Image (cartoon, rainbow, N blue to C red; front, side, top):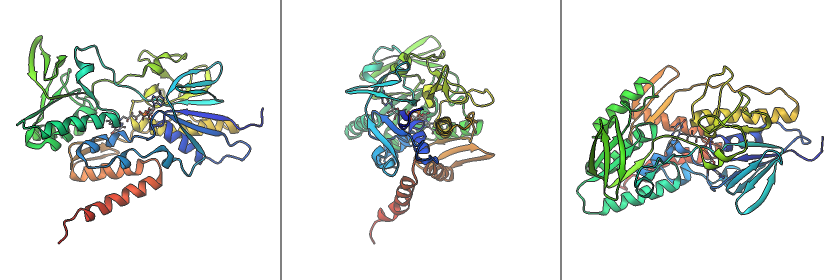
Length: 397
Ligand SMILES: Cc1cc2nc3c(=O)[nH]c(=O)nc-3n(C[C@H](O)[C@H](O)[C@H](O)COP(=O)(O)OP(=O)(O)OC[C@H]3O[C@@H](n4cnc5c(N)ncnc54)[C@H](O)[C@@H]3O)c2cc1C
């Protein structure tokens, strides 16, 4: 075996990749086995996606929800490289980057996340907004500002997809727009939040109703124009005015994941063993939304931050174990429950035998996520900010 340090490339700095890199840097390496760890992301900031809604309502600021990688990794041995990954050659053990030469690895972690599929609905690509990234938030806030500053009596917003993002976004937007908002949540099945525990679903339905959000069940978007949309319900089409349409339905993988020369599942993600390794490639790990994971019991796991975050611990451990001659650990998923934001001062949570909704749940949600922030420095800075902000914003007497 060569004496040069192992090169570990972590592709993607989200819940799977960033947390793997951070855990890797905390493990007890002997000086002779310490690897070179490089984290590559196309963005310069990590995004704590569950708090994306809070940027739309102004409850939080970008630095809190999306801290720069340079800050998060400052006190670690992880090197950050901002670059777009364009490919991977498992035979040559090389990662290809846009505008940079190939990068060689001994072990690689694929944590490039998922993407929002855009079905071929006329007008969708040109007119609709998505809601997954900081750029999406900027675009949405710009459009809302224009609409809010217009003299229009009503602001008509449609959100397609009655999953978590659709329902949470509808509640937050209803609070931001207040009396002027006219919100529709368009869902093609007969229920919203189908995967949620009943307590959360009922709390969300009550919140949507109290905020005046209209839900179109069994309804599909047929086409979208600059100021109108056509919906289909029970075979009947109807064209309605709309000022803004947000598409949150479905999850898929990026073209890059699809094109990787590795085995793919039916959903085009990368199937991995409970050890998070790609079939026939023990040096390639994949986790988070880019992978189809199973846990030690053989059960499939959902595509959530909660799963990616937990997988990161195992991924880091297994990389360490494989380089230090220890046994690998199979991923054991612990379903900790689910939390939903239901407006600016309300949430619902169910899990670990606990059920809570309303303002207290909103505080609990914030605190749980604060605890999940990637570094304790960021936890402390944001936590202190939350404590002092109400005092700073108090009108002087
Ligand atoms: C609005 C919203 C709210 C959510 N709320 C919750 C919630 O409350 N609870 C929950 O459990 N889950 C939630 N999720 C889902 C959760 O965010 C994802 O499941 C989780 O982020 C997946 O982690 P990941 O590491 O696989 O991908 P991501 O966290 O998406 O990270 C992927 C990273 O890869 C980078 N990347 C992608 N392609 C390239 C490339 N070609 N080159 C370089 N870098 C690249 C991206 O910039 C990104 O940083 C939410 C998602 C959204 C969009």
